[in-house]
Image (cartoon, rainbow, N blue to C red):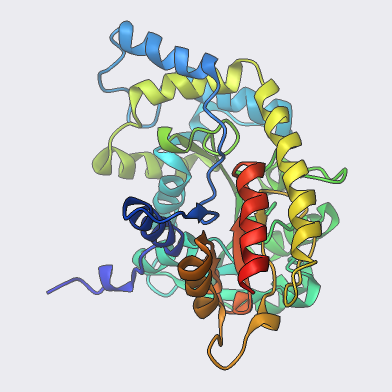
Length: 387
């Protein structure tokens, strides 16, 4: 009855945990949510005002399927200013969030059996999007280098059917970053093997301890191989507005636009105006969030490493902690799924188990600190008490 394509998709573990937590809250349970990667900050007022103006001015009709020209131009200027990436309008596609950018790209590039290299642990949706687009995921275990991808790992993983490598730095779920030197070596491997690179940069502004984000798309020799994916969701606390963008080779971006025109048409007209203000208006909200995330990161790192059975490497970016909790396992609690259920039912703390992020994360949970310090302190205390 169902297509083989749809049967390859598993429900999002992060959204499933969030839904279960919300249901328990409705039942009157006191639940603290650390599952979803959603900044607790409100969307900045200037961005909300831009959306209101768009409504008042009647900007509520169809736009070009690939996005309004002024938003594309804002993306071009942002990439030039912050990422040292040169692009033209023809290289830019505005999408309904970063997920649609990835889906459009995989639908455009993948034939049945084409291999996508995914460093693991990995963001929950990568492999499922690849599967529905009839590609094959090959996972690169990064545990040997503290969850940081190296060129050597990539070189050892490539096969004749490898077509795409996904890069996500800072990483969801680990918060680790790929060193610039390694990215430059990976670029050489991509050129040698005609390997497409997807650089998922949604956490680019949240880097700590003096580390800085490097966009592999800034290397001019890779202009025909790199796709830079981003969104306003995390940077401007706009997760619900659903505006993302992708920049890459013109011919492929053009075909992706055709696909989008027949699937969703344009991204929300009002949200596009809000995104335009986000990219061109005041940027001080980013630093405010980054400073607060750093404060929370420092607290979580110190606190979790004082919990018996927990081991946490210091996250270098994003807003996730990915502790090894295998020291808490026993006869009744044998894996991170059991541990996650235990925390939710006994402590009222919602986190995400390893299963969302691949086999190399099997002894880990993801704890999002994109929530208030008050909730973080209470959540850590509940975990300590229940253990």
